[in-house]
Image (cartoon, rainbow, N blue to C red):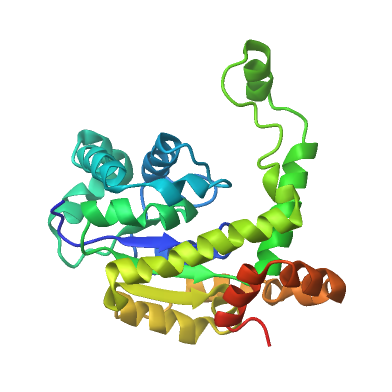
Length: 287
C-alpha cells in the first residue's frame, strides 16, 4: 500500500516492555494512533490483528496454528488488511493526521501490539518498507508477570458486561485472561514462541528494517538505548522534559526482577525447557 512513509511495527512477547517503549516513542513525536486502549495498543490495528488470529484459529496465548499458515492464508489476509487500511475505517487510527500518514514522507507513525509478532509476514505485504522494533525481556520475569496477571483476572468479580455475557451465553465471558499462562512451564513455552518468531522477522524483512532491544537496557540505560532507536528510525530528537520525568519514574527493579525469586524456581524452569534456555542464552541472559 502506498503511504507517505512506511510504519513502525513494535513487536515482542506480552509483558516485555512494549507499552513502556510505546509511551516513550509517543511522547517523542512518533504517532502511534489516535484511539488507543489501556495497553497503548491502537484499537484499529488491534481489531485487525485479532481478526487475523481468529481466522487461523489462534489467540494471543495459543499461536501454534501459525506454524501451518501457508501462502494462500497470507495472500488472502493481506488483501483484507490492505482493503481496511485503504478504507474510511483507517480514520479511526489516523484521526486528523490522515493526510500526513498518506502523503508526508517525513511523518513517523506506527503501532504497538504484541500480536504483531506473528502478523509481520502479513503486514509486510501491505507495507513492504515497514520497520520492526523487537523488544524482549528475561523469560522468568515475563513468566512471573503473566502468572500474576492471570491469577488476578481469575479472582476478580464479574463485571456487569461479563454477567450479561454469562447469562445470555454471548461470546467468551473471560473468567480468566489466560488459563494457559497460569502454569509457569506453559508461559515459558509461549515466551519461546514469541521471541523466536520475533527473531525470524529479521530474516523476513532484512537487517536494515529490524532492530532489537532488551527491556532491561531500556530500563537501566534509557538514554543510550533510545538514541540507538532514534538513529534506527532516522529521528533527530532530544528527550523532552516529560519523557525524562517519565523515565525517572520507571522502577529499575523491574529489570532482572527474577533475581529476587528462589534460585531453584529459576534454574529448574529453564533447565526443563532446553529451547527456552538456548534462546535465553543467545540473548545474553544465561551464563
